Image (cartoon, rainbow, N blue to C red; front, side, top):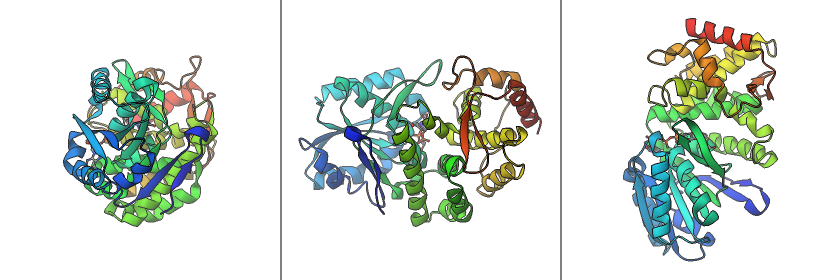
Length: 368
Ligand SMILES: NC(=O)c1ccc[n+]([C@@H]2O[C@H](COP(=O)([O-])OP(=O)(O)OC[C@H]3O[C@@H](n4cnc5c(N)ncnc54)[C@H](O)[C@@H]3O)[C@@H](O)[C@H]2O)c1
């Protein structure tokens, strides 16, 4: 499987996508090391399944390591765990030219990436993403950070990794719900910029969900290539990178409404948000009615959540959801920015959406 290269000048790096990469990580990382020593940060669930093979591979390559195992879950992306990781790295005498390994899903990647960004004003980072969401999205592109009590991902930094090792075998141990939630981000890439990829997913999605390793690797590769292309055009999200937020304006509001709890995982919110973004696009006559129907048909076939009624428990009313959307980082001068579509594979960024159209859409979606 060829690598995806992210050509960002002095911050360029490769994303390797293959089977067995965790066990081979030692030899993959060795060329980056100024001295044969790394710091590994992971979390309990992932450590129980994947830390052993990683350690064996490091030892086989003659690389010493120190390890820190954090609690799993979104709650770990907080100030106190950031302090814990950063102080641990200081105590371990991690220097500028050393490498920190982040082994885990998006939570570990974001937290450890941020710690690496601020330790000694930036030490090198290797991302070893173990969830589908982290492999196709969060490990690539350099966004790192933690949550504030006032909102998600509000504190952070851009810090590109030096290498990403996406071992698709790791996905075999991922709980099904987390896999399907991560698939929400995969579908997003097809919807925002590549109708051919969406068609490929319509055909291969079920095999991929059943565990077809080759199909999984291909889906990860195509997703990462699309993300890399967009990040290279707009590293710090001044324009095009916002396309990657398709489904997120709705999704983030729904995550906030459900208290960032198990009621709704991030990727599930993105999938519901993508369906709503296509509904809104059709209502505004930007695309035909068939497009949102095709999106929902695929989400339905994959057993994904796609309606507000798929979220257990009560939700705020349309006005309440609109208020949550107004907290979004994508608000500029008080105007909500939406990612809408002229069709599958043809998304664009706009601040020009009448609030009444959004309110009516949400009222209908809540009543459905
Ligand atoms: N930086 C970015 O660009 C970016 C993009 C998208 C999302 N994110 C962030 O990513 C986070 C969500 O990521 P996530 O869905 O990976 O969450 P996560 O890290 O919490 O992982 C989801 C669950 O899967 C478990 N897990 C992970 N890999 C496993 C494996 N191989 N086998 C068994 N269990 C495994 C974890 O323990 C956890 O319970 C959110 O905080 C979100 O804000 C960041």
